[in-house]
Structure formats: C-alpha cells, structure tokens
Picture (spheres, rainbow, N blue to C red):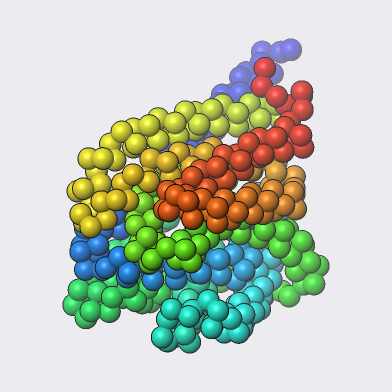
Amino acid sequence: MSFDQNADLYKKCKRESGVKRVLQSKLLGNLLIFTLSTVLNKGLNFFVLPILTYYLTREDYGYLGFVMSVVTIASIYIGLWPGNFLIAKFSHYGKAEMARYMANIFWIVLVTFGLVTAILLLSQELLFARFDDHIEVIMLIVFYTLFMVCFNILNTITQLEKNAKKYALLQFFYSISSLGIALLLIIGLHYGWRGKLYAEMGVLALLALYALYYFIKEHYLVWDFSKDKLKELFAYLFPMTFHVVGIFLMVTIDKVLLARYLPLEAVGLYTIAMTMAMIVNILFDAMMRAWEPYIFEKLNLGTPDAMHWIFKTMLLYALFIVVVAVVYIVLIPWIFPLMIDAKFQDALAYIPWLVVAFSLEGLRKPLATFLMHINRVKTMGAVSLLTALVNILLNILLIQHYGVMGAVYATLVAFLLLYLMTIALVKRYYFTKDIAPG
C-alpha cells in the first residue's frame, strides 16, 4: 500500500472516529436534557402536590384516579398507540416515506376516536354510575384523550429528530400552563377534581393544533390514503395494543377493583402512592426517550459492533435503575411528609414495593425493543395480556384479604412475571452466538 493510500485510510479512520465521538456526545447530551427536562417538568406536578392534597379530598382523588384510568385505556385505542410504529420503523423507512404513513395514522386516529366515544356512551350506566353527569365526563375523557394522542405523536417525532431542546420546551409549556390554570380553577374557582382535567385538556388542545401545523410545515405529513399502508399499520399496531393495554391494565385496573371492594378513600390513598412511586418510572422513561432512536438505528445496522454497543449501554442503564431505586426507597420517608398532606400518610407504606415494581418495568423496556424490531408484536401482546390477567386475578383475591396492600402485591408480582417472560422471549427469538457479547 502506498504512502498516499495509507494517508487516505488514516484520514477516513479519523473521520469515522470523530463521527463516533460526536454521536456519543450527542447521545449523552440528549440523555441529560431529556432526563432533566422530564424530571423538572414532572417535578412541578409533585411540587404542587401539597397544595392539591390540601384543597382536594380523598374522594376527589378517587374520582380523579378513576377518570384518568379510563383516559389511559382510551388512549390505547384512539390511534392504536402509533408512537410504537414510528419509533420502530422510522430509521428503516426514512422521513419522506414515513410522511405517507403519518396521513394514514391520522385516519386511524379519527376512526378509533368515533368508536371509543360510541363504546363509552353505550356503557355509561355501567362505568360511570358514581357520576351524576355521565355525558359531560365522557366528552371530557374522549377529547382529552384525542388531544393527548396528537401531542404524543409530536413528542415521538421530536424524539426521533433527537431534538432534546425542543422536547424540553414543549414539556415546559405543557406543565407550566396546565398547572397554572389548574390551580386557578381548583383554588380560585372551586372546580374540584374537574379543574385539573379542564386545565390539561385546554393546553393539550393548543398543542394538538400546533402538532398538525408542525407536521405539515416540516413535511412529516403527506395526505396520501393507502390501503396497503393502512393494512401494514393495523397489522403492527393492533397486536401492539394488546401489549400496551396489558401494561396499562396493570397500573389502572387495581384502582377500579379497589373502588369495587373498598371505599373511594382507599383509591385516593393508592393513587397518591402510585404517583409518588412513578417518580422513578418518569426518570427511566425519560432516558428511554433519548436512547430509543439510537437503539433502533443500531438494530437496523445489525453488526457485531452495533450489538455490543447496545449491550454495553443496556448494562449501564440497568445499573442506573438499581441505584436510583435503592436511593429513592431510602429517602422516601423524608420526602413524603414534605410533599403530601398528613391525611394521606398511610400511603407511605405502599411506595417502596411499587418502586421495585416500576424498576422491574424499567429493566424490561430496553429488552422489548428487540422484539419490536423483529415484529414479534403478537407475541408481546399475548404475554402482556396473560400477565394482566394474572394481575387482575391477584387483585381480586388479595384486595379482599389485605386491602390496599393486596393491590400493591399484585402489581409487584405482575411486573416481575412480565420481566422474566420478556427475558425468555428475547433469548428465544433474537439472541444468537454471532451477536452475543463475548
């Protein structure tokens, strides 16, 4: 090899090394911004908890917890959770082709919005017997969910752009605006639990309009109705809804069953405990938002170096989860009285167990990306539904014997089971000797 050829090879290696350093530094920067912005924004919600728990009763929190549980389930079927497809397929199709899928995603959103609204209206006597104004509550739920789905699609696009600063600005706007209006409605105008939902729905409506404007302006949306793309979207998203609904059932059905067997005050206590425990889950999810686009890019490459990069970062992420969980469990007895009114003191006993449950879920999510990448969505859906069924049965049995603590035990066992089954599925369907770390 000549001197000139050696020099060219050296320059090429140097450029590739520089690109690698830039990529790693951008990932680290995005991790920090996504994490800090999410923690600070969600932290605003926890900062006002002393105010909200002072002005809202246990019964108010029971109503709020129930309504948000219905919103959570409705959000799965309005749009069929399109962010899963966008995250898994964006690096494969690219922006131009994905813009055509986006148009068909919005067709799905509109159709499923109508179906969910009709189902809730038909079942109003069954689901909303405790409410005097069934229709108002249902309309609040479906439009809140519709606007939230649009905002979540915008968040996913921002995540795929790896634009952490823009993501942070959007989250700050949503949190500060909705909290400010909620405090006005609750404290100043005495709207009770409805004040929080009205405030959030109004801000989400503005963000949904901005999302549509941004998608059109930045060419993320091309109005191209395609039966083939609809079939592909439905084939991927519909089985994934079983996975998502399984996960959400494990964190929502417990409140419904608590309301069935215990007074609404018990639901309020459990809702506070879940809220405090979810602080760690918020932190884990924020890191995943920054990390996921890189994971799927590496999975699309499929090279040994790319796989080793994934394994190493997963190991660091797992270590981070364990440390955060331990530290939070140690500190929560001192944090809780500073944030929560004394009438909710009984909720403190449930938090450490729920933190362990959410930590197991944090460990599971990176593993699930392997299954999403190879389109094992039906398998994921079946496993999640099976786990949710186990969770429901455990809730029914344990709540009657142990009260609120029974719901806590059921949640912990369900997340442990799902984590272990995900490990087994990934080992069976994905890992080979060629890509396993040495």
